[in-house]
Length: 184
Length: 310
Image (cartoon, each protein chain N blue to C red):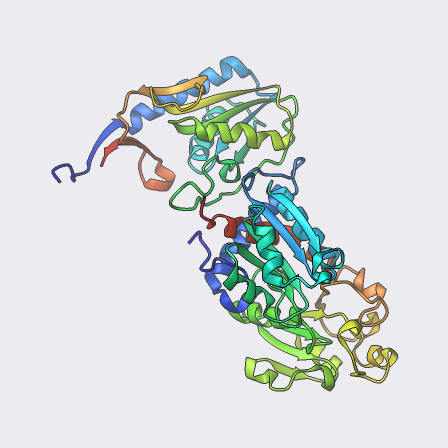
């Protein structure tokens, strides 16, 4: 009865996000060089914004062209079908290439329980057998994993208690680049 | 909106526009799925579906079964010709026996009108009507609309003519309901004996001249002449039917536009439609079949979502 007020604090502002995005892009270049045999996969719906930002930096600022980029929706691969209160809404999957023997990089905004990534690992098999899969996230919530899944590239690691939510706002969708921790 | 307003798909009559939009949107996703190298998703791995076919069917049964398997459901099949129905078992008993084996969803085709509505009131499982007598065939109407929408963008204000045996056709009735929900204009065309009396009360126009009907429409949905449902002669001869209502290349070439040709199958080639028309670029008959799987996946997925876990 006393805890009804919602608190919202800023974890990262747009300048900090910009620095992190450039660092993540450089880390990708370090491991994938020209991206000749690499594909970037944004996890729908929220990971695609991050993926598009990274693509933009790689193309415009580091002049790496012809990076293969797709969007993967995991709705039909979730393990909570009929277990959620509200039905999950599907998004578009857009992968117009075969990922057989490619290096795949999954890109998502927040890594929490790891269940979305588990679903993505199953979903991606429908497009072939990749040579390997890596995971890039903007926010890694520590101590919250339900599954043994860890990121290969992380923007910022945070300790957040369970009832708190981490929300990433993107300028193209929400008007500003900010990461909030919301307690409600 | 991400949930249907109904728990069973008994007929288009029970749906609203938002339901149809949701089914189409979901079918878009599944159409992408069935064009992947691996065409399967694990969503329904804890759902068991019984396909009860009390009337013959090839395409609909295959299409449903494929849709169920693409969703990873467990599937059991039952056809009346090889069952205890012949020994006198009632419909409810048959269904309840199957349900005791822990089935969550029933897809049923039955020769009697209203069989699915009846079953839905007596058994505890989600029901999908795969055709009940001359009443409704909702998934066919959904895939027809979906296929038109794919070609024309939207159904709003489009002119659709349904040609042939309207009297015995569950496809016609379900199509009329579905098209009207989406704002299309509808006419039916066929021999007087095969047009139901009072069909105008549904808000449907009637045209007896095939040339005029085709001149008017954007899409012609050509139905099969259902000899098996005709105990009496509704027209003098198949040849006369073909001459008066058959769709051929010459007739289509005489129009000043290119219309879309549909047929729910199975085709009587040379009777209601000639081969050159059925196989032409104007025809979307095979698109209808492909879309049928995506539509049925969507319907089953959305209904299964609402089944309570036990």
